Image 1 (cartoon, rainbow, N blue to C red):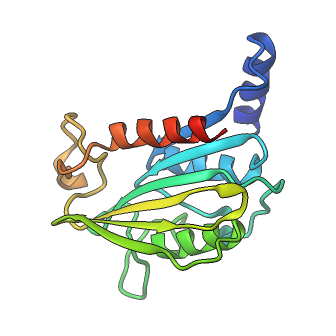
Image 2: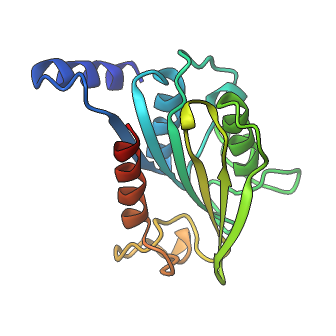
Image 3: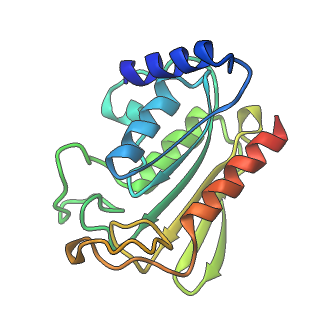
Length: 188
């Protein structure tokens, strides 16, 4: 985490990028890292996109710093066998995965002071979008829940190993992330 912040500071100084927004994205462990950046550098990070790994570090007993409200986009499959969507008594999950996706989203909504419950929209047969609105600093909190797919990147042509499950091809995660980040730029 500290190294990531040092790299950001170095690049901003070296290339005179102090006024540019900072975006982060990641898959699985990279999504956990980007979640941590959104928490511990909330005043520096503009938005994050998290694929198969959304966390809210305060639920892990860590402290978020700053009063920023980075916008968050997440994608997660109900059938993710590595980082399960829900965690309950029957769920076998790794030691770093102590709570489910909905708990992480609710904790982010609370941290961002979102005053409304999430709106729900069915996009396609296997995709539901949850959007929290009326959040501090006009931040966005959007989650795509995939009923088909595994621990994979939605729309990826990359052949994931079979044990990670199928890839949902109904949406293109990369394009949606690009559009999400572009919208955050336009709102600045």
